[in-house]
Image (cartoon, rainbow, N blue to C red; front, side, top):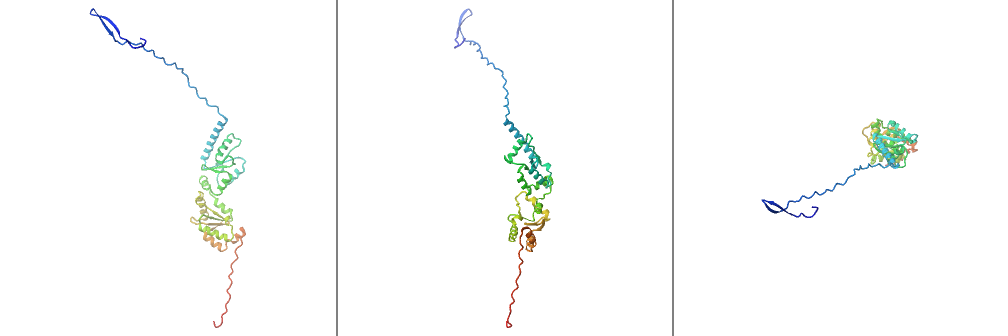
Length: 297
């Protein structure tokens, strides 16, 4: 059947010579329903993604990224590194200042060449730390950016790198000795130090320009321990109090010693020579008038 409900058919057959009518309810086998053939699939390979052509900007960004990685690797590999240029007066001056402190400059200076193809990208990587406009040299210490020539020279003269140079290069710190040798009089003091303030008042009263001779240290600064160790070595005392005074590179002692010498006029010639301070006039005691007594008194 092609379709529609199945209808029972009358079937006649002979059984024992008799015609018998039966309903044939045997289910009629329906012709197999033709199955829809699966749609023919065309085997097509997925096209590979073709990378977009590199633009000048993408190439530049990739180069800058590589140079930044190179810069960070250099900074991380050395405790102190200086990026400089050939024929750079400030680079040469910083090199001399570092060499005077016993540091092998060949191990810390990295000279860049402007003619090198990587120079623009490396300069851009430095600009991330130094800003768009900067000059050489540029310095890093323990992975941290320290600044350019002026900033680093100031830190160098303040003893900021003394401990590092001593640990890394076995360089003997000389910052405190340089201060003592470069000044006719230097007094090392601390904030909130009563004896330091008292000595300053005494010298102010004598007309001495105390702003030029007092150097106030700060215990909170990282370089304080190194400066203190240098001072201990110079004065030969492991226990001392502030202020500590040097005159013409000679150690004068702590507060009590210096106050006694000041009272005795020990520094008067030096004050007059260095600062034009006139020594105080000696106090002359006037004799008391003789009192005459009457004989009957």
